[in-house]
Image (cartoon, rainbow, N blue to C red):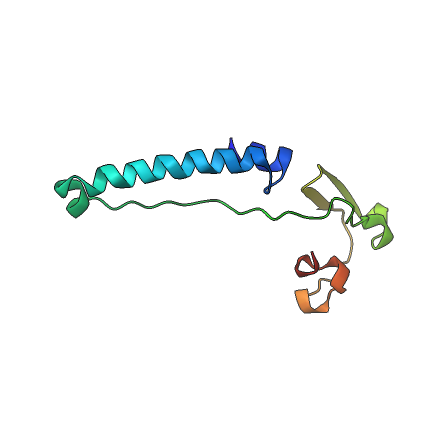
Length: 109
């Protein structure tokens, strides 16, 4: 649900904030229950994980791959917030993050 809301409305949206507040309340209640039970408090480990975060970006900031790479060398599909790029056969050069133009680097966002 959180992933859907983040991709649909953005990470800094009222929909996302409401859902995060609900999740925070659930975790708070769980921790209160554990804290009030001596056995659980002594014997239970709580581990909370996430698969990734999200960053709000300017919707006008777009990278048009065809401006940088010959379209015959790859195929791509995706949505507003991601893209899957499939390299076709051929010889390619790969660059480290520090070698890429700043406007193509995620730290620029």
